[in-house]
Image (cartoon, rainbow, N blue to C red; front, side, top):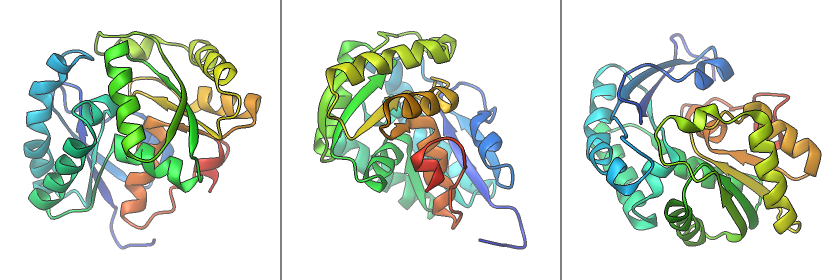
Length: 238
């Protein structure tokens, strides 16, 4: 889509600060991004609860700053209360801002659906409790979860310290448990997955949907862009 001005995506960020995460501008340099942090305290329900209450007000602030669409960043932040609560949150953001909007969780679902995935293997940063909530969310969204493994991280920000090698190794274990999976999902906006996801897809010959990359892919599609980012897997190539 060609316009006479720069498109702006407003990011409701799980961080306490308003700094724009680097992944979106790196993938789509022709799109402008602004952010408003809601301050997740930990990767636990108690750590998410105060941030959840700040999502809609943050989205309204971003709309007031000129955003053309809203992305609610943070996978576990948006799925931890369950599928129905997630759907209500997304409806509330859209109603309050009058803008097209998507969450990272909805983007993961959209990416998997775009690839025609049905039976999936799942890699995460999370503890068993959050993994179980993700499994329930994905089942409610219509997917069969054949295997799910996580890094058992509870500290907010700690996922960023996992290396490509760590993520590829986790995916190796999931793929071994679910060789029939037609797609692999890597969930957690804190994991650096652009290169790791590419490596996993090439190694196992199965499409990979990563929460961060699918979120920006889906967000720019809200405003008429293709989302295409060549060289990093089937979803971003399509």
